Length: 278
Image 1 (cartoon, rainbow, N blue to C red):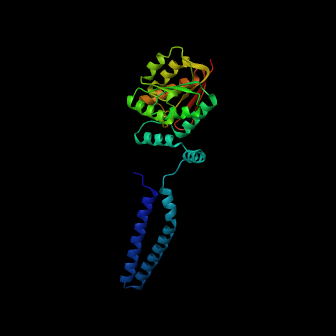
Image 2: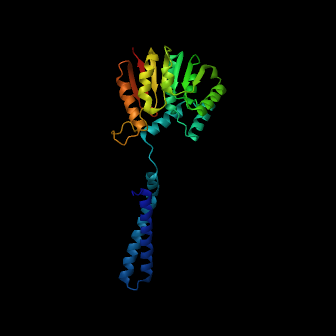
Image 3: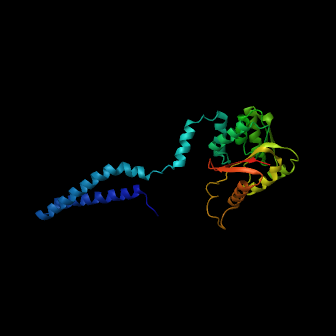
């Protein structure tokens, strides 16, 4: 097992302390002058080593602390300058984290809200409501938008409806409690200005192909989790989990689709933005 600098420093301190104690004891007990002089020299050296180690102690302690990555530091800096979340969004975020409910990273949520503000969409389709966090971001970004959001889990749908009612946006959001692919199959000729994908990762590529006919030309397709906690960029292996394989499949199709001009941005867990060109 790899030892930390703090652990090694602790053991070294004990060793120097043991040498000092032994040298001082030998100096006191030795009868011969030469032996006493030798032990005195040894004790003096041990005391000097202890003094130097005391001076190094703060640096060793700092070296043992987890190092914050440049990306994490940049994210924290940017977030410190950004507007605070509304109490309702903050409470919902905390509840998601407490209950292990997947939610959009704050940086990605800010980007999604900005896209909604710029596009001023009339109709939004969201695949993956969870407890309503991301839909609330979109609803509050542009009050002219109507949102259809898909969540087959009844418990989460109930929580989301309560959230939307509390926020005063319930009349603009319809929750459909069915699997996403089944909902898309029944859209008919309905068109959307923005489709936000954040549901079952193994089905991402299927969502894309199925929903593109329902996206207006010039409309946006936005998808979250495209880096997938850094797993998507690892060397493919037979041991890869199905979700990672599904995300890779989506990414390759998303960036090469003939009907899209798309990018994947290293924001949050990786967010993709594509414009339908035809």
